[in-house]
Amino acid sequence: MEPLKPKPSFFLPLLIVALLFFSGGFLLGEYYPFTNPNSPLKLAKVIQVYNSLKGSFLLSKTLDPQKLEYGAAKGLVEAAGDPYTYFLDPKESKDFFDMINGSFQGIGAEIAFNEDKQIIVIAPLEGTPAKRAGLQPQDIILQIDNKLTAGLSLDEAVTLIRGPKGSSVNLTIKRSSLPDPLRLSIVRDTIEIPIVSWKPLENGSIAYIQLFNFDEKSGDRFAQAAQKILGANAKKIILDLRGNPGGILQEAIQMAGWFVDKNAIVVSERSADGTKKDYKSEGPGQLKGLPLVILVDKGSASASEILAGALHVHNKATLVGEKTFGKGTVQVLEKFPDGSSLRVTISEWLLPDGSSINNQDESKKGITPDVLIAPKSGDKKGNIQQDTQLKKAIELLK
Image (cartoon, rainbow, N blue to C red):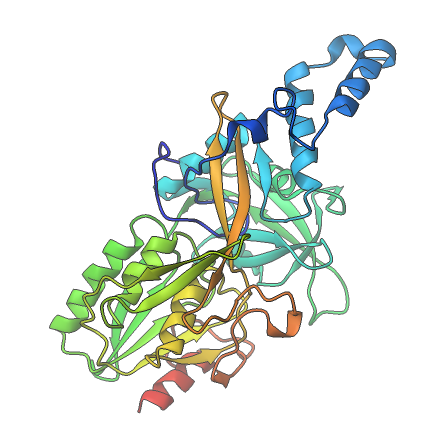
C-alpha cells in the first residue's frame, strides 16, 4: 500500500487479498516494556524460553532470532483475543500496503473469524476467481490445500491462500445449506478491485448503483457517478452494497453526504474510555430528495453497514435483502522502522441513533433490513430478470 499518512480509520476484517490501514500513534512505553518499569507486562518468560531453545533445541544453530522475535510478537497480539488485532511481519506488511493501489494477485475474497474462532468468508469480491468458483459469504474454510485451518491465525491463512497468478489453491469449505464439506479448486489471478458502476433501469427513471468496496478512490468515483445520474434526470436510486466488505471510513462519510443534510451525523466513534467523536456530513446533499433503496446481505460489512445504517437512521433509505455481517470496530495501524506493523482495535462505531453494529449479542449484531428477502438459487446479481432482491427494490420504488 502507499506510504502511511494520516487518514480516517479503517475497520475491515482481514482480507485474503487486501486490507486498508492508516497510521496510528502509540506511546513508546507500550512497545518497550523492558525500558518502562511501570509496564505490567514482563517479558522475562520470553527470554527464558529463548535461552532454553538456544541451549537444548536440536536445531539450535539454525534458529533465526528475527523470526523468533516476530513469532513472539504474533503470539502476544493473538493472546489479546481480538480477531481484528494482529501483528504483521515486514513481508506481510508490504503485501498489504501494496494493495491500496487496487491491484494484486490472489483469489479475491475476504476472511475473518466467527464467534467459534473458525475462519469464514465475509465476501468474495465481484469478478474474481473466488466469486467465479462459487465461494459464498459465511462459508467456513476447513482446510487450505492439505492444511487444516483449526488453530491458524488469519495472517497464516492468508499466506496459505495467496500465491502467484496461474497457481491453484484448494479450499475445503463447510456451507450451512450442504450436508457435506465442499472442495473448491481456485486458480489465482491478478485481482483488479472494482469500485463503482451504475446503469439506468425502468426507462431511465431508476439509477442502479453498484458499490463494490470503499478504497481511497471510492468517494471520488461515486461523485462522478452521482453527477452523471443527476444529468440523466433519474428520479429514484437503488444502491447495491451486497457483498461489499467495507474499507475506508472517510469514503463512506463522503458518500453519505450526497444523501443527507450538511453537518448531519453519519457515524460516531466511541473509545474504550467512553469518549465519543462524531463524524458529520460535508454535503453536497444533491441526491437527498430522491427515493432510495439500499440492497444489503450477509457479505455487507463495516463501511457498507455504516453507510446503509446512517442513511436508514436518517430516514433516507429503505433497506432490502439479508441481515448484514456486523463489523463495527475501529482499527489503527502502526508501522515500525523494520517494516513490520501492528493493527489494533481502539474503538467502535455507533450509528447516528447510538446503536452499535458490533453488538455482543449475536441476535442484535449487524443491521436487519426493512424488507428481509433471500436470493433464490440461480439469481444473478444486477440482472433485472434474475435478481430477486433487485426486483423487490424496483417494486418498492414503483
